[in-house]
Length: 637
Image (tube, rainbow, N blue to C red; front, side, top):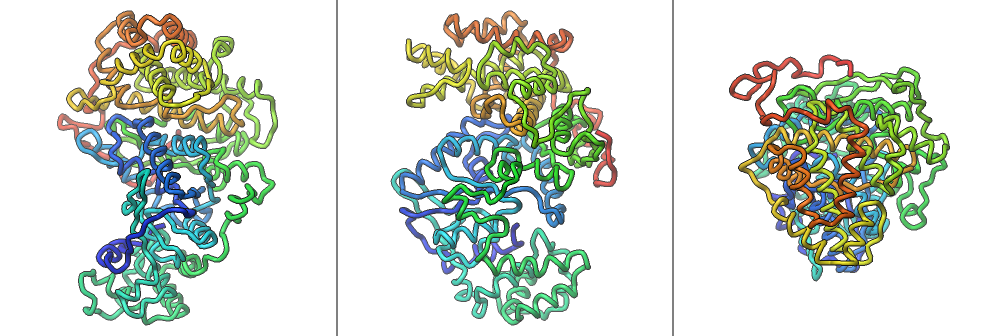
């Protein structure tokens, strides 16, 4: 949730509030959402080209391997959907707007945010590493604290809420943890030390302070009337007036008095959140959702509802719960050309309509999509009607896998199913994503985009095979590369050596237009994966780390963008060292897409990509007008 200004207060007194401690031979409850963003944003992984997911996967593996080496047993707890009472709606809107602003900055600075396929990558990696994890029904903070006390172990997170909870073994902020294969040292915070800094601010009073400072539920702007009635306090140094007033009042007020005084000063719609917040912070003896101890010890999800069970075990996307409960979805901005009014997600509306139909039925139901339009956030209105007459099954229906694959082919508009049958495993899904992308992306993507992605998938798979002992084949690409590796290790290493320079960031030739095209693919990947998951994975899932490295894709495209198709093929096949099997696989994948795409879309006239081409900009590249600054209208999707 986050408490406004509390991290600042704590950091100014860190010598008293934190204790350096060696962490080993213990359980550790990890805030999964915090870790997902921290490992991408704070480990210097390149974002400028849209996401280097193989590097991100390596960071995740390194992090959890190091914890294991120190005999730390990790339990990852993830946030679920948004609360039904929309208590954090304003926060979600603000964050979506901030992400649009950050995306605008990525081409000229090192703005940081986690790209859209990070959660899928994170879950794929920790599942393969057999790290225990769970997805809560809603926000996870309270249940993380409850689980940590039940396990008598610390919490690892980057959320200021954990400065308020009375955690028996303390709270470790992520940015204070130093972990390697040989040691793990963190700064551990204990709430009981707060009264050493502020005499009288005992643990039962910290929830009052949290509510008084302002949170995602009750914004500070809603508390100004309350602050104005409090006496000034100059006795606390180095803090703002509001922080000083809040601390002094929290020390003197009783829990009941705090609740009634705060409620009196707030609008009617916010009053219920005062007691709710005070109770949430004060009582961490019971889980809000379901018993996480039983879940981790016995794999008991405490439900007979198949959808709930699959949500809690991470087998379906979290957005499914928001669609069901709230009929809304936030489509987060990627690294894309903000000066184009259409976001990358407009091209995947067909996939989302299929998801809506599965979850809500085909009766006309309005779903609101919060998405970028130009440089602003807009609420688009969409319906859950069927797509081109494709009969979408309800989520609870049981149908055969071959029928599910037929549905996927229909939704992805992949006409020649016998072509898909040539491939095995998740290569089928890779081909479906590629084909949909080429058919629906606007502006159109050309054949170089397709060939770059196929090459990237081959190279990333080869990297994994070389680094993994006893690698098991799962698809068409795996089998050929694994055979190469067994017959001639040097041949595969040569492929990797030739590709290495394309993984290096080259700022001189950066083109946001090229990145924008590949970001369209990320949207296809995300919603294609969600649709496959909701159908029960008739095709095995494919992880972004096996397919997408934005830096590599951008650099290959730049190298090939002025070549004709035949020369592009020759250039790419030099990576394969005349290996006939690999060359044939490449040709088969290209043909599979080409045979299912209109020829006018395949042969796009290429032009110089520019970040400044737009109806929304003048010569300077800044917005000449902006009619969607506020969420004041619904736009038909």
